[in-house]
Image (tube, rainbow over all chains, first blue to last red; front, side, top):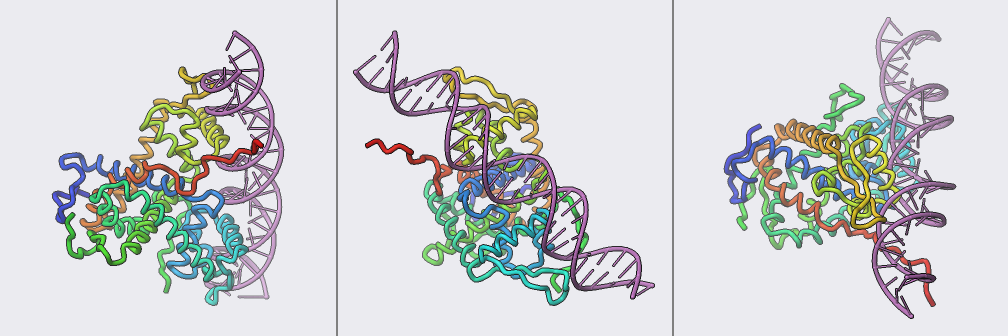
Amino acid sequence: MTAPPDAPGGDRAPAPGTGAAEDLTRLAVALERAASWVRRTTAPAEWNLVALSTLDALDTAGPQRVSDLVARESISQPGMTGLVARLEAAGLVTRGPDPRDGRATLVAATEEGSAYIRMRHRLRAGAVAAHLEALSAAERHALLAAVPALTRLAELAPDTHDATRRSRTEEGS
Amino acid sequence: MTAPPDAPGGDRAPAPGTGAAEDLTRLAVALERAASWVRRTTAPAEWNLVALSTLDALDTAGPQRVSDLVARESISQPGMTGLVARLEAAGLVTRGPDPRDGRATLVAATEEGSAYIRMRHRLRAGAVAAHLEALSAAERHALLAAVPALTRLAELAPDTHDATRRSRTEEGS
DNA sequence: CGAATTTACATCAGTGCTTTATATATATGC
DNA sequence: GCATATATATAAAGCACTGATGTAAATTCG
């Protein structure tokens, strides 16, 4: 990884001349602080971050098995079972048998669940919009320009610290 | 503001007039997913996100009172009192009297606490670096360029859903 | 100055989410 | 069919969070 030189696009580069490692650390800190902001601005009485992330995954990627969600969200299997049970009780997801494996349980977002997570996204968008007014035009543009990269970063393997590694690399099929 | 044409995976102008709301929603979703990634890649056995954020605030902004931390982290005052007690027991912070207000307690990061949070930042930087290799140069640049905006966004008032002021239980007359 | 009110924090009791350990059902290999 | 592995559910327990309440210090007002 090398610090990108003068990048095209006319945006100001992150202080040319500073070390690449320092840039990386600043990015890491910025991501952690942004995560903290997301947590702080999430209504406490509602579903927690794990639940919202799970619901978002089901809405985006379609039905998944409990073990898939466990691997994705990095919580324990009983934890995910309990979460799915609560989401089901609230009518946000449904549980059904997996036609390909009688042991597995397929979890799918209901129409209400999809509507809920999209409503949450709109709420978040409103909060973001309220804060964007305090930023400069360049900063606003920089945030919007970073959306694809942020999304891809979040999609990448959730390993890093790892715990129960499942070597299964098989995809949907 | 320059509006570069569509570049693969990287720069994308806000597209004035066309789907600004959708851009906002995409940004909101990207932030939530990035927050989810931060949470997933934080070792569960370690300190939780509130603790890390509190420690980061103490390391960055210096000693603070419990009530300041409560306002900043959006958790309850008993929650913060308990968290500070745990951090103190671990040797990461110290509690002392506020010379300007005998009722208050000043919380400060210890040298060990500062070293710990900086170690966490380096760990995060390593995780980010490992994933940046999978991104395009444009995406990497977009992320680095967004650092100041992300930081400022996270600094802005943690309002949104409120909770600060609680109505008084006594309605005089 | 002294009493009442407000503020800052600690303590208590309760709740919810998480974990590890274990059980049940299905799949797979012999 | 039996033994083993896998996928999920259930049970028991721990801990962090919340609301309610208590205590000490500061501020306000007579």
